[in-house]
Image 1 (cartoon, rainbow, N blue to C red):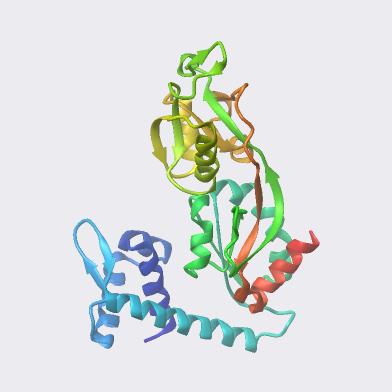
Image 2 (tube, rainbow, N blue to C red):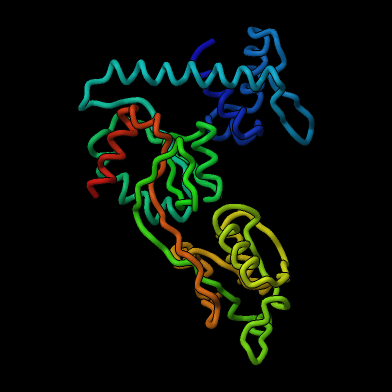
Length: 291
């Protein structure tokens, strides 16, 4: 059982989607299926439950996932031991939102790439709310994330920037905001809110403090999706200003006046404490600190 096959299995165990893994790993779906079948034959257990609509790990698959994680960690450690201090190699996996990928990541990674050109950067973008989960699941070495109210004890965080949270409304649909003599009617105005994550925590805390029942139009994943829904006139919502300023829909929405001010986001580099012994992570962490 070679390292590449273990990496393919590990990627599929994360995505639970043959097409996504085959595309990301540059292998055809049929070839990926054959790899998984060979692994299952060697292990003597079914690792995935497949149907036309979904893929799930079996109990044996979950156990094998731990084995794969352990082997891949040992493989990376071997690379570290064989590398000299100034010639790092191997892979560094990063997770961040699309906005962070082109708004923050370049300034963080520019010097790193020049210093360690033999380190392969594996970048995955997605919902910012999943960043800490990716670290906890060991699906990424480092993530760019918003600092939660309580940072898990096994994680460390290094601040890179700050951004306020702003309520926004559509420009072309001004009537979507219901107002009274006292200001915005928050129980009548439709809201687009995140389905999970720190933004959701912030807005839920505000709901509880004000003791009102919000008119929730939709719950969606990702700040970019929230901005799109608002630009279409579906409601108003709360997003980090950094995301808004990078959005292609910036000219179709406006920051809402008279809205409450919620605690801002602190954006930074985050990793598991145990990852700091990894020289690739350690070097990035040190460079970000100096910057």
